[in-house]
Amino acid sequence: MTPSDDVLVRETVSEEQTGDLALALAGLLRAGDALSLSGTLGAGKTRFAQGLALGLGVPEDVYVTSPTFTIINQYACSTPTFEGAFFHLDLYRLEEPDELMEIGYYDLLRGDGIVAVEWWDNFPEEIPQHTLHVRLAITGPEARRITFASADPSWAARLAPLAGSTP
Image (tube, rainbow, N blue to C red; front, top):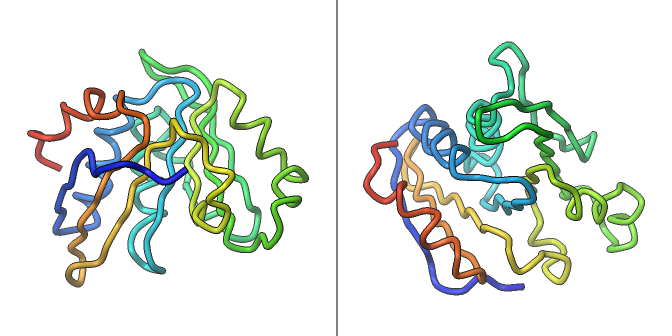
């Protein structure tokens, strides 16, 4: 499903700000949410996922890495508003939709965890309508334009607290 109009656009000037924006977003997430993280290599998708993990209560001593080779990384989360699992997927190495079944993709989406997927745009027909699309674009050495969009209109109200926040 292709996202509708942009819900929110934010600019960050450092990796730290990009992570802080993701950390703030994590506080707005709830069980069953799915996020698509897209951008060119080096745009900050994994850094964004690290901020999400921190905001979801993954302990700071747990290093959140890109699951390029493992395909799926799972982290236990605990915050006052979310208790469960954060799944970070990287579909870059997958070539056929059948491989999604093999990795348990559909089970993750039906679960009550929070799922963030890099390279989901390789399988656009498999992206649920409720997904929040997070596009990271490089605008400088560490600067990024981060665009949030979704076909689900409920995201506009949910993201409102990020509109005025400082990353």
